[in-house]
Length: 106
Image (tube, rainbow, N blue to C red):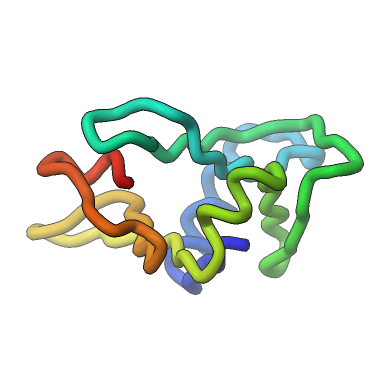
């Protein structure tokens, strides 16, 4: 299961609050595609299945499907807001290689 840093938790919480729906969860998934084989997908979701894995970081609930959870084991979602780096990034120890754009891995 993926872990959120404090900065990522804060930013996701702010984004969720701006949506105005208390039932939202952050869904993190790994899908086939991208130039290296797999790509990350993150979006707000109001639905989950009995098979989904859920973890909460304060008021932020994160939902991951079982097949994605295997590829995200030990991964960390971070958020940076600086001059050199801005936005969300995933550090995944399971990724053997990543593409130049940083959006896909294998």
